Length: 312
Image (cartoon, one colour):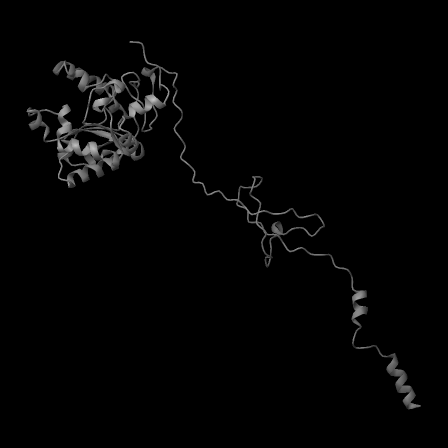
């Protein structure tokens, strides 16, 4: 009897090892969970083509905004983000008004402003950034003149002067920026002093590149002996001096170009001025040197007139 009672009690006790099939059948159905999608888009690119984020890995504690919803809405296919590596260019100067008379023309401060005997500048034009050379070059170079030039030209000019001196040369700077009124005074001086050479030595006011503040007239201690005149400052024989020869061969390396070559008179309208160099930047100066042309010749062939010439 005792044996029969023990067997009956064992049959009524619950099993300690659950049946896997039974558990699986009774388990509730869980919703499918997508891994979170982490966007890597840059700020400010929303809505632009090619700016969708890259699919990332599951973050330990993703922010709510970066985790995709768990509803059955399809997730769009993501493409790699396209990031531009183009370096932005500087904003260009405003396009000048070419329909204005030259006597009213206020040029921008670019390095390639066209100035000829036909296309001049207003008496009111003055370039920005003028500085005195006395703070950058010694008196044996500036000759004590109160010469001013635009700041943009100072570095290349000082470097060029230093290299000329290292080569044993003695360059001097006779002239730099001249305002409209200063050019009128200079013109009158030459008309009185050397009327037969005035047109060679001085442009009418408003038609001189010196008004741009990027032009230098160079001198040489050899010129007086070559010409046979002690107080000579400007002479076409400057091209024979050691300084003139060096500048003609090397000035373009520093961004300077000879404005009025001997062979360009019919194009420029100016007589040969081997002492007159204008800063236009290394790229343009090198191009002009290798092409064997003046800036004016290049501009007249490639650019529209910058202003309407005034009626004489």
